[in-house]
Amino acid sequence: MIQPDPRTGIQRTANQMMKKLFALLLASLGAHTVLAMPLTVPQIQTASTQTTRYDCKDGKSVSVQYTSTRNRQSFAALTVDGRKLLFVNVIAGSGARYVADQYTWWTKGPQANLYDEMAAKDSPPLLADCVARKK
Image (cartoon, rainbow, N blue to C red; front, top):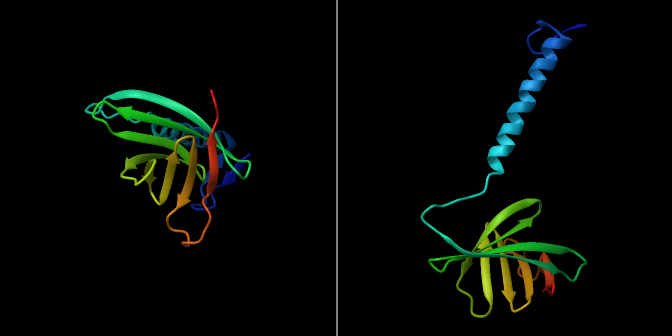
């Protein structure tokens, strides 16, 4: 069946349209694959990696991958609102504090909270009273 292209008015066969859709699909899959590649920085060597699962007060749970490097930096990777974010360890008065974008992941011992720094000062944490699962 021949259908006109709504933008150009040019007639295209169903086969031509399928080829175009297939090419777009392949291109989008390729882009997705590139985005899913692991982040590597050759100058910074990983010393250890550990994944911890937390159960939070509201019934939600979160998995956090902690990475320590040979030059004594620490990172935490976790998903916030569907986005996988890499948090960087920063100075904290108590516990370990990690920041990424507008978020702070703050741990002290087995407990943790996720804060949105753009929220009102009296807003509760996005994830509150999270406790690390025992292994």
